[in-house]
Amino acid sequence: MHSIGEMGRDSGLGVSALRFYDRAGVLVPARVDPVTGYRWYAPEQLDEARLLARLRQAGMPLADVRLVLAGWAGADSGDSGLVPRLLDGHLRRLERELADARGALSTVRALLEHKESSMTTTTAPTRTARLTVPAAEFAAALDAVRFAVGNDPELPVLGGILFDVEGADLHLVATDRFRMAVACASTGGHAGERVQVTVPTPLADAMRALLTDGSEAVLTVDGDAVELQTQGRRAAGQALGEEFPDYRRLTRLPEGRRITLDVPALRRALAGQDGERCALVLTDTVVVAVDPAVDSADDRDGTGAAGGFDAAGDRVGVNPAFLLDALAAGEEMQLEYVGPRAPLVLLRPGTEDTFSLLMPCTLDA
Image 1 (cartoon, rainbow, N blue to C red):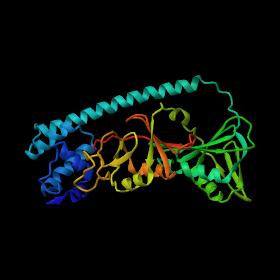
Image 2: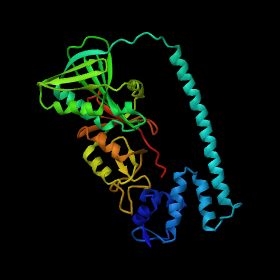
Image 3: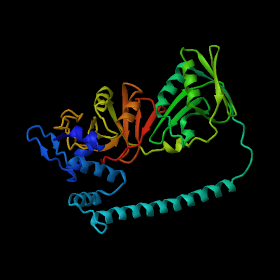
Image 4: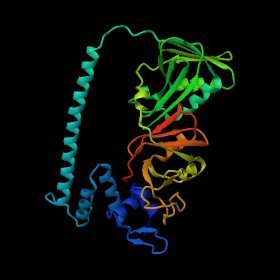
């Protein structure tokens, strides 16, 4: 017999997914210990679990997966059998969806080209700014956003940090699409128009390495050239050429309810999560992390992190590693919850201009 941990490792499904498919009646363990509730699987169920993993990887709906597994167990392998027809039908559906997506994206490209051609071709003003920033504030702002920088080679502009200078404020912004971090530092010496420049991550890291004392740093932007000087040391380089997304539009959210977080307890709970998603259970006064496949915090397989908490409240799925990154901002933090599909907002009490957003994920295994 295979334990649930062995089954998860060898099949590629993971323990949380196996619990989900047990409760859904798709892949029921051969034996469940009546005392501990621990699941055990027969050796022949390993091939079935691997097949299930591939079907879900291909995006097949759960209702069709059930039929494929039932037909496969009954040796339905003929060309006219149910299983081949289900596989062919799913492939045709994917091809239709791909064709529809191609058509929609072609329309979007045409709209973008029309917009670009209809815009005036006047020369954009030169981006120039020279300002002073307290080194400690600048370092704290860089630290607050660094974790959210993207690493997708298809989206190089997200591989940098936006420096947005407006009035006396320097906003720093980073996003990898699934999360966004915004921080602010005060400045002096800049009274001109708003200046935005996207600083590549290596240059931003080099700047951070210089900010080791309480002196003032001088930031200079001249077109695509960016330079930071402090205490006779210098870091300089070229900005990324692409335009950063309008972060202000992305952070314009309805007001939600704020919940004070027990950050140390939540970190401990998240550290026990080994998957790409876990559930946060939100009440008016507490946030608890539990395994998404556990009906309550009384997890008899021993992997839940709620410790006897009655999991009654709103549930929202998150990537535990991403949430841990956001919680590194401080020991006192609040979570603002707008709704199950809206980004979660994490911020420190009394600080409205430094925060991070985290996109929720589905709890379907």
